[in-house]
Amino acid sequence: MDSGGGTDNLYFPRGVIMGKDIANVMEMDERKITEYVTSSWYSYSAGDDKGMHPYDGETTPNYTGPPPPYEFLDTDSKYSWVKAPRYMDQPMEVGPLARVLVAYASGNEDAKAIVGHVLSTLGVGAEALFSTLGRTAARGVDCLMLARKSELWLKQLADNMGRGILEVHNGEKWDPATWPKEAQGFGYHEAPRGALGHWIRIENGAIANYQAVVPSTWNAGPRDASGQLGPYESALIGTPITNEEQPLEILRTVHSFDPCLACAVHVLDGRGKEIIKVKVL
Image (cartoon, rainbow, N blue to C red; front, side, top):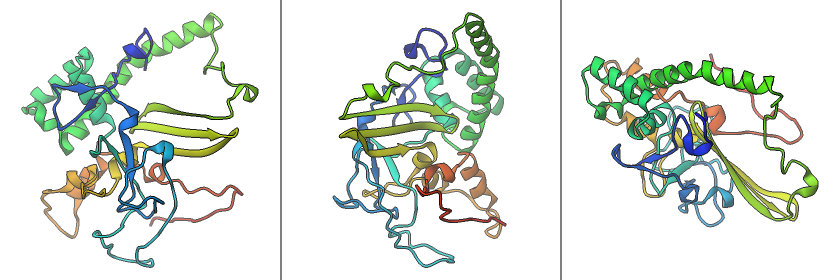
């Protein structure tokens, strides 16, 4: 979402907010990302209590839960197929709320105006953004900001096409003959649900390791080796439930993250064989 001038002038600026301190937007450093499997059904060769950077990450399934079908999981042990990503060893929320907060705190005029209107209409302060209410509102703010810019971006695209500028990617290193035998690299992108990163390491001209950390993994990740809760879990603490038989409040909070667990967990078979079929009634 380039507003002109390259990646240093993005419409939605990059940044990290720690400890809800919107007065201090930090620069993101991918080297500070790790993933834990302490509470996940995977195993690490160095020990499940270790955090691993995606360049060195391992995805070795190790299901230790009860045989399905089951009603309860032992949350004192492993209980999820989702890993637990951490930044500076802290759980982080990604998605529209994070995107809008960073834009708002960084001085984006559109974000400041729309968020200010939302806060004044609701009669709350900026601290209310860190909630189910704020997360739901941020999805609307995010949508409005993008809708207002879409016509401009479409015009820029049409203008480029009219001048014969049709490239959709940087093909400078597209020829496999030019690829190095040893290399590593990562690509980061802000997807609709939040921060999406891919890491690859090449050895002897072949892919030695490939890892992805996707938005719903950040948000749905379970506890890590220090017992820190993931964003879903933290958001549910203290939620009042009117009817335990119909816990709509829990659904409302989880839905405010716009979860995509199909993205958080990838199940692939290189031979094209169907591994599992899930039917939801």
